Length: 304
Ligand SMILES: Nc1ncnc2c1ncn2[C@@H]1O[C@H](COP(=O)(O)OP(=O)(O)OP(=O)(O)O)[C@@H](O)[C@H]1O
Ligand SMILES: [Mg+2]
Image (tube, rainbow, N blue to C red; front, side):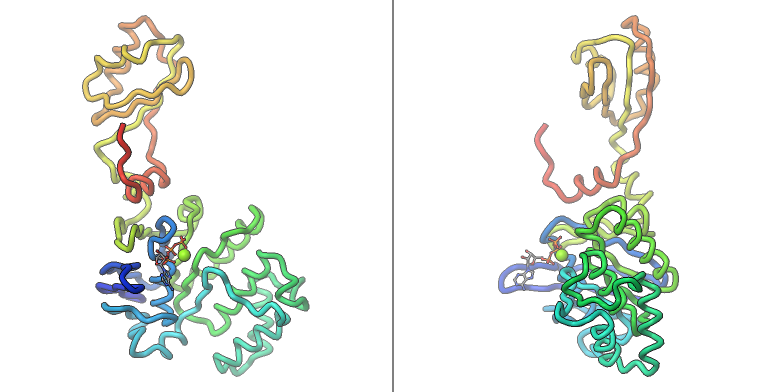
């Protein structure tokens, strides 16, 4: 395992920001780390990078204990923090030289040039960091996180605040880099997880509520099936009542319905249309979106 987290807990005074969590990340995996605001994602990431100490439990990165072998962990890890705190008065190259010095990189000039090329910073490389747009600051942060060629990357919301073009570019950059590395990335964008990650860990109030492959998560709520139905004429909501196993019927338009049931009720929907002298214009089962799964796992159940 590239990363092993075991019974990790972090207390800020009385508050348990991370509550006894355990998970592993295999070498080469890109893990999406999801959770609502305040769930404990950044806290976990800061512990993994040796930025703050845990209260209890262990975290091992590339075979090194984050608490006891912090220097070895730092050599193996590249970290893009949540607010990417760069030095605004420094020039891009000056900053990368500074980071390269911290890592005692020998062939500095060459490595800096490679990172500038890799992260698409060439055009902006002579500017001060404070003059860069958000996307280019993010690229500078990535270049700094990658300069020592770490085996593991910890990226805390790497695309937050970027425009759609920059998001696509940074995403493909991370995916590219991630081919040879282990990556944990936190995000609030579900599309991003679907586009980039092999696996997802969802954390809520400091606890892990899901740890699975995306396709498996989408099948999580097997007891609820969703059918989208379109009829050729309007019917009354109460008419749906006769269908066994139907939990909910929501009108989406005059003749369109979203039906939720515990079983496969397609046959019954067909019969229903015949009995009511309607033509069934369309009938489709809907896959749960990752957003639905996320909300189910991280929100208190709302009363119907
Ligand atoms: N230095 C700190 N002192 C006190 N409480 C803190 C500190 N850092 C974080 N917390 C608290 O710990 C909890 C978890 O915070 P954390 O930053 O890990 O959440 P997050 O999942 O990264 O959220 P977001 O999606 O908003 O970035 C929050 O309630 C937060 O207020
Ligand atoms: Mg955070």
